[in-house]
Length: 632
Image (cartoon, rainbow, N blue to C red; front, top):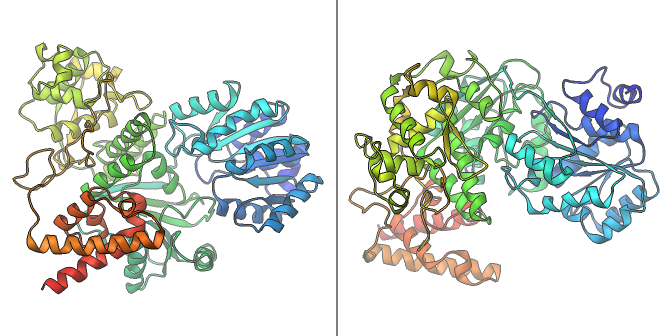
């Protein structure tokens, strides 16, 4: 560690290690593999950069993003460290030169993506070099149970067999206990020393607000932070541009940042944000990884994030200087439906989709938390905290209503059904819904069958989410989403405590994505437990539950459908793909019926996922606007 401390001082200019760094570095220098989970902004990179220089030889760093590689290489070079990257952003000559420097022993840290590293040619070439360490950044991408699984990362599990003499360090900011266990087993065969730094960032004030008028809410929030640097996250590129213009009109120095911008413009905006005071960056999630700006005073989410892990990582970019900062989120029912649709559109198996729905449910539980919001957030990561006094629920508590009797009904139904089923099944029992699964399990014969008919299913869903958020129930995210009773819940069932819930969220709908023909709804699978929350899709007044609108199109709708089909054909020809690849007829028909006018409405059209929202919202919305204007 004497050498490591010298490297820390001489190369990086720090007098001492931050919490969590020293143990991980010491373990690596002692020849042990390491899994490190540290909050965003706590200095994870030094956990492998310092050992890389202290060990000598070559360290190969695996990173998922080209921009992140380039930023880290540039930072290391400025610090006098011989670092290189081999990636698609470089020309062939540049990559060849980088490899030659690594092969000659000049380079100490070589960055590349997993896809490039795990080619047979690259592995054979590296086998001839003195590779001392593999550092795998964003290691949660390895785990199929993690929130950002990338199949390319999975192949990294071969490294310990291919390079038995090399050390492996895996680093991430966003891994719950299930994901950590999976990484440890897959990547290290269980032989790893884990370092998990506390997840609490007590200087960040947490708050959540239902969307009412998001533009007004956004402007009001930013206005409370005059002259301060902040990050405003938006779900789409178009909304990013719109929000930046909105704030600029109020005199805020707001700049957009998203992957659709020219590289030069994006880099220029990032540089202004990093160097000038009082700049607000309005961005998609493309912004933030590797950004270390200490004086970000707030992070505002104008849309619901995808999971607690994503949310935690994004708010962690605020208040890195330890001074007070604020993380505020706006969310609405359209956000929930959109997020569920994104999960369904993901190219993944049913197990992963089910798990991602559970992660979203956990985030909704955070949004609906009737007690300390920070305690709910930390509970998700396995930490316990009493009321923090620095969140909206603690500072200005929402009205809470005594729901002890209803909570006891839930607990009784969970216990009597064996504590292995998901909330959808439990709610069917409470509401007296005789589904095939309920009858097959004999649960229609239970004394709790039908005791909850006084409430609707959406009310029960919110109550159960709040019971999970407050620790009366436990949700099995890693399995089939079954819910079980905690010790705290057993006390409530026995009358030793009370359950207070938030009335303002209990009636909120949480629509699920539209299903394809023949697909089962979440909660209707045969596996024990099924996923937890499986809300019905939103429906218009008079529509049959669970059915899409049918019947012939009106004359104006049929005319619009013709316009949409012509546009689809043109876009398909530009991309040299069949027309149905752009959108199916079914999607266009639904589009003609709904006639969306905004990106949020367009995202609710059946068959519009995240990628197609990005690619096609603008031309289709323009076509609809024009057609409706012509129709008068």
